[in-house]
Image (cartoon, rainbow, N blue to C red):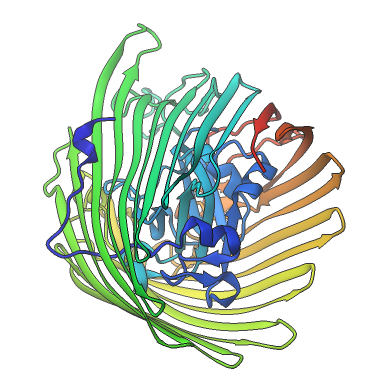
Length: 628
């Protein structure tokens, strides 16, 4: 880890990241979320739909990586370019991968050039909890939060000193391992450290076709090369956390997540077919609570997305450097949460952010800053709840953007919830959109959105359910414009959708189902008017069934998606699919668990991006030590 990249750039004004609940609070209240309102809130009181994936769920699914864990969940659609470790884009409620905000422990992630987060490089072994908020949150977080927010919390250990570890092996020479330790140190202090390793020989990522030199109109297809080989992947990660309570009113905390990966894929000498990547999040946080009615949080952070690209010539065996892209996001924040009454809370704060690009590619502009102020209000009166938020961003390149959100909820005595929420959002163009030589368009305007969400849910003992319908309208959607062969703004896009989630437990049985329908349409002028936005499946879902037999646990998961179009013209259609996974766990005693999994047991052949392969039937077996 380069020490130069651990320095934090503090702005002239401090800006806000979410006021995170302490680990002790999250242990006592498993349903508490902080992402929906930037304050600790019971999940049932959020006026936008939320989902919590805790450590127990991560271990139960035996997911190998973060994309596999998210697959099929409500509102989420994934596209992957060639199997484990390969580029994976997350679409939420029909919005693009760059329209979903991702945070790690409150630190804003994402590439300032590509405009998305490398989900496949974020190691599951380092993650304690994930909060997913579906719907616009730009009125609290600014750019990118049009489709929703995904916040990842790394492990926190506040109790007795504990150790943990896991090893596993599987198909395609998969081998992975992790180890960690953490706990309290007395006098209000705590620490944690985790390391993880994963490696696979992979599959042949792409069945691409090079251009035909005898046919001038043939530009090839897929990855535009024919490289029938295994494309491997390796990931190494380190997580460090520490904190201390200074007296009764001050808490200090620091965290580092650093992941390095080596990736092989199929591409030509201009792009490269190997990459060495870095994902990093560094955060410092101070929380001051002078009274039960007030809490003030200061936070600073830096995230880094780095990639060095190489071309390994399969004919000569030589490896040559191609390019480097290194983007950094420095953030700083201040937030105050003030209890106006026993049932009213006002949150006020400011955000500062600086994006900077270092690259072998010459960008016309390589840095920009954003300064923002926001306020949020929450209130309860009997069975009714209100939530409102307002934010103004001042971007160095695009000027001002004001966004807002307003929600109302009603809870019946029987536990049924009715929620209505309206919110606006925006997304600033990336540096690639604007300035990539030969492919950028500096005339692009920021995307703007309006979303209305209507939700109905309930809890009846062992049964919980949630149904939502929504409509999002986006102005100036950024997409590739064939008329100018550059990115352009689509005048209008409309996304309509519905989601249903059910969770039911009875004795040793657990049943969970999540189904989503979305209709993302291009409503702008031009040849593609009325078409479905590319690479979005209109129907997705998953079903999980688990059963306990004493020390033995068994489960099955079915996840799938309907057909999608791979291009804006809707002429390349990819068929729908469903995969079935089987898993077993057996308690060996003394906190040891033996686990095994068979993925895609029916060996389903499918693609989520044209010409890019997906794994067939695979197996995994491992052992885990996890103090309960």
